Length: 56
Image 1 (cartoon, rainbow, N blue to C red):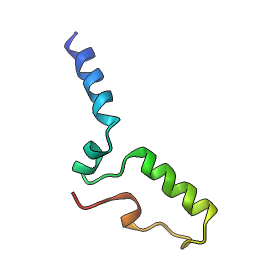
Image 2 (image 1 turned 90 degrees about the vertical axis):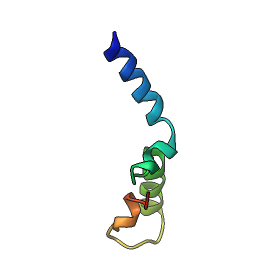
Image 3 (image 1 turned 120 degrees about the horizontal axis):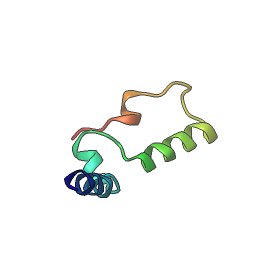
């Protein structure tokens, strides 16, 4: 039962962008927006480190 509670808590934490940012990562929705921008906009052909990681 404890495993189920932990999995539920983890899913809840994953929904909040600030939890990703605390770990120096971007939320999946932010990455989706970057991919959309890169595939539909005039941007450099190669991704940069800053596209995926942020200062914590």
